[in-house]
Length: 285
Image 1: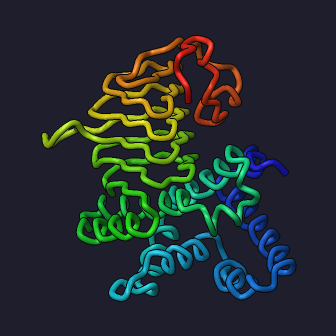
Image 2: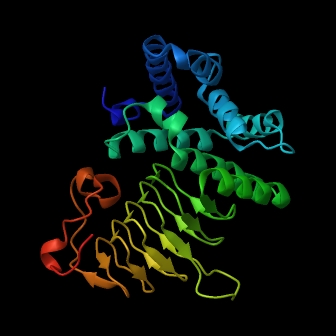
């Protein structure tokens, strides 16, 4: 069954149950075909009764240190995921996004176990919840561990939608007042940063369905409109209208189109990095 069908025409709770059942099926198959992984797969996935328990256990083991114990982190993550259905819905949407958009993702369980962009995003959402509850020292400590372990540095105050893909994810930096919409895809070494030391609302706002190519830098309180595309290596200091491409350093606006009629034409979902090439022939992605 295609990944999207696990969520379409069902409630979020039903989608979560379906994805979890699919993950367990995949892991049972992998444990049988690769006995060396059987113990790891059992302790990380098969021994747990739900997706949130498995994810909490896995994140706790990934992010623990000699002074920040895995049991403490497990309880912290499990409390957040169990008490907040929106966090669980975002997790499932992210799993489906990775599975649908990244041809290297061979299964849901592969994403859950091995994709550091996915894991960093889920951990940041918990850090954001802590930040919103005025538990800022713990949120910042979690941010530091996420950066150390996954090489992804997202401030806990940043707001992230669902259906987000951080592809490869190494070197992604997202500032405190940044906002990332739904169904956004961001490649490695992307920076959503400020332009100096001035405080306040100073980071980019990324609309739904945006695609941001590898190494792109977006600085300041600028708005990247719905369905926009930011070419790899671009430096963006200006607003980008919806359904428009920005490429180059400094970035130039290229083309633009009406809202597409099909989901496959939304850049953040299609992952199409090159459709604008004929409009700006001297740009290489």
